[in-house]
Length: 117
Image (cartoon, rainbow, N blue to C red; front, side, top):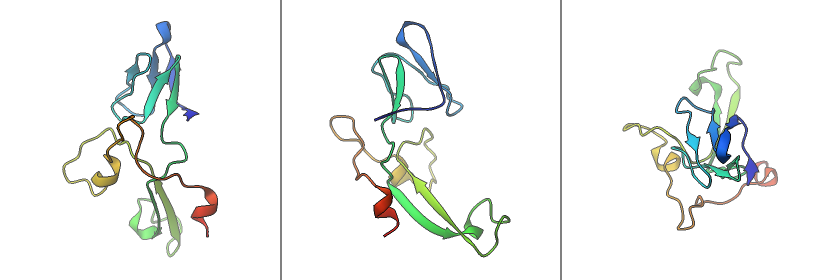
């Protein structure tokens, strides 16, 4: 696990996540709506750091930044843990991937060596 970025410590060991508009406030040993951040001892930790669930190289034209370098490619990387529940989401199967019995994300860890071989 790695300490998360974009959170604020509060009193009594609580923390507030400021990564998205939900602004979850976590009690000790609690997860937010996304299910991938957890308060441990008054610090917020990410449970998905280094655990990519999807890696893909796409033509830049498929992205909202298509106008930057037409004809080039972009590298997309994703983890589980979306805090929305969109009915027509094309990534629903990975964004809402089930967790194991211990609450950990099911999936394999990806290292940079695996990405570029």
